[in-house]
Every structure is written in C-alpha cells, then in structure tokens.
Length: 95
Image (cartoon, rainbow, N blue to C red; front, top):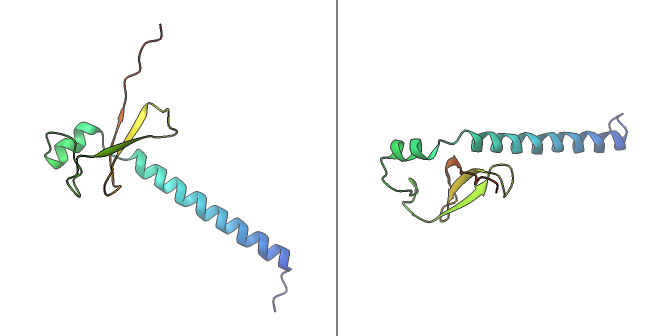
C-alpha cells in the first residue's frame, strides 16, 4: 500500500473534486457571458424574429445571468435548451 495516510488521501480527492466542479461552473458562466447580444444574434443567423438557430423553435425561456432578478438576461431555446443570446432589460425608474 501507499505510505500516505487514508485521511490525507480523502482530503486530496475532496479538494481535487471541488476544484474541478468550481472550474466547470466558471467555464459555464464565462460561456454565458460570452453569448452575443440580441441584435448580433439575429444578424449573424439572418433572422427577423427570435428563433433558435439550431432547431428553429420560436419558444424561448429567459434566465437571469447571476440570479433570477438580474437585469442581465439570457435567452435559451425552450425545446433544445441551447443558449441563444443575452440582453439587458430596461429598468423602470423608481417613483
């Protein structure tokens, strides 16, 4: 067997697993932040209205970039789940 104590092996595996999960989450978030703006998406795919360039579905779902209430929004296809574009929704002036 190895000369490394079992608790050290468990801690090392836990640390490496945690770092891998954080890395994958950051990569996913960076990919979301790199999505094109709405107008650029429409122009790139030659579309007049919002539709998925992958499956041509017009059904979309909207998510906040950091949380559900974030004004920076992501739009994904409701059918194939591909992320399409991002935009910033207008905030209403406070009364």
